[in-house]
Amino acid sequence: MLAKRIIPCLDVKNGILTKGIKFKNNIKVADGDPIKAAKFYSDAGADELVFYDISATPQGHIMMLKLISKIARVINIPFTVGGGIKNINNMRNALLAGADKISINSAAVLNPNLIKQGVKLFGSQCIVLGMDVLKNKIYINGARKKTNLSAIAWAKKAEKLGAGEICVNSIDHDGKKNGYDLELLKKIKAAVKIPIIASGGAGNLSHLLAALQVTDAALAASIFHYREFTIKQAKQYLAKNNICVKM
Image (tube, rainbow, N blue to C red; front, side, top):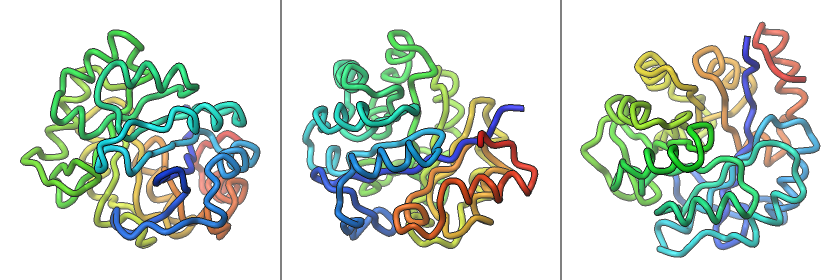
C-alpha cells in the first residue's frame, strides 16, 4: 500500500508567506519568511512541500527563481512549484532552480497541449495539474476568472494528456477550515486513475483523515502555519485511524 502524503502549502505573495480565505485577502503568516517555513516543514517530517507564487499569474510577472532556489537548498523532500508558469521554458527554469515537480493551472487551461509537452520533456511524474474549482467549474487567474470547463471533464482530459497527478483546490472551502470538499474529491477520484491531492479546508485532524480516505494526499496550510497541529501529530492521528503514512 502506498503511503498517503501530508503536504504543507506555501502561498507566497511578492516574496512573503501568506494565507487567505477563498483565494482572497491574504495576510502575512508569522514573520513571512517562506525559506524558514520550508526548512521547518522539511525537518518536521512533511512528505512534500508545495510553493505557489500566488501573485505571478494575476500580476503577470515571472516566478521568483532565486527564492525557489534558496528554498530547494534547505529542504530534503520533494518540492512542487507553481504560479506564473506559462511555457516549457518556465518549467525548465523552475526545475533548474531546484523544483522536483511543476504545477500548472491557468496556462494549461489556455493551452492544454502544455501538459503533453511538459510530460514529453520532463516525465509525467513531474507535471501536476492544479485545478481551482467552484461548483464544479474551473477558474483561472488566481480564481478570478470562470471558465466553461467542468472539473470532471478537465481531470479526464489532463490524465489523457499525461499529467502525473491532480491537485484539487476548492475555492469555496479554501481557508475556511470547515473541511475539504469531499463530494468533489470523490467524483474526481472516481473519474481518473492518477493520484489526487486534496486542497482547501483543513481545520483539524479529522478533516485530514476524511480527505485521505478519499484521496492520495492532502495539502494543508493554516493548521500547520499557525502551529495548531504538527506534522507528527497529524501522522500519528492518521496512523491510529488506519491511514498508511510515512512516519
